[in-house]
Amino acid sequence: MSDNVRRPETMERITTPELAKAFIDEQVAAIKAQVGEKKVLLALSGGVDSSVVAALLIKAIGQNLVCVHVNHGLLRKGEPEQVIQVFRNEMNANLIYVDAVDRFLDKLAGVTDPEQKRMIIGGEFIEVFAEEARKLDGIEFLAQGTIWPDILESEAGIKAHHNAGGLPEDLAFELVEPVRILFKDEVRVVGKELGLPDNMVYRQPFPGPGLGVRCPGAITRDRLEAVRESDAILREEFAKNGLEGKVWQYFTVVPDFKSTGVKDGKRTFDWPCIIRAINTTDVMEVSVEHLSDELIDHLVQRIISEVPGINRVLFDYTPKPPATVEYE
Image 1 (cartoon, one colour):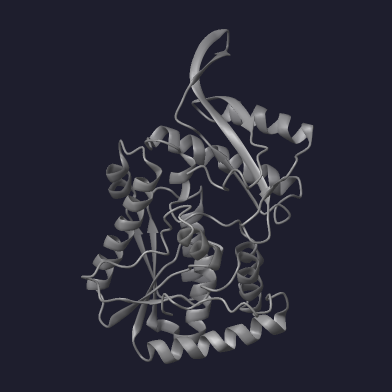
Image 2 (tube, rainbow, N blue to C red; image 1 turned 120 degrees about the vertical axis):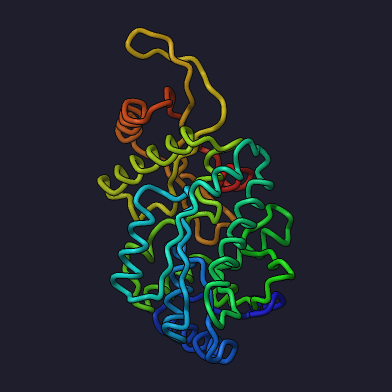
């Protein structure tokens, strides 16, 4: 799908299985027409967008889709294992797993600028794909889970988006972007119609740079682990309290500054952990989910006692605008 494909102003919002099926049929035909018998490479993160793109392409071209799951060290706890289980074991996808943790984190060491971090992560992704592509025959296409808000935000100059940039000229890949004109809620309806499991379709959206944007400033392995562990606690508690699937997105951020605290009668000098829980339909405007005092107290207790390096827990009540969803 070329860069100039726009969402038609008259396009009806996809809210029903019928509208989703019509979109799927249209895209399967478009993919077949674009790709033919050639192979397509897809970055499969396991998030909603890439999973729906994978399912669409599997429906259209089967084993000619080569899914590459790159573990860059910025994924949530348990995610690489889940991607392998769902796609390789259950959906019989043509899946390649790449462990690139050290490679990414070494390149990101000491980098504080958010845009530079995004560019490094995006650039390294392309490099990993180029290497995998050179091992394969007949790869001419690169599929991406770009969605409409990505395009709008990139055009407005709000942020550089990992999906919205062009490939380096030395790579001859043509882009396949079957959900480019959809909003996030529409992607979910399409995923459900494609038969993807609920825990994938209703899974929280996750940024391309992963936990890298939730570890503001220069990423260090210890602070990254604090983000990963606190995020896992938050997800576990939301599931226990019936909030999973009801709140659009919830996550933790561990910023790069420390404050004084007390533990076991001794002074500590550790990071704060910020909790963000939000609701939205189209990501252009975002409201904050207000949690019960009991749940917040419980989260504070668990995070400060179970996550090394954390001595404060804060809650972010800011809507969008003025705050964006992510911190970087």
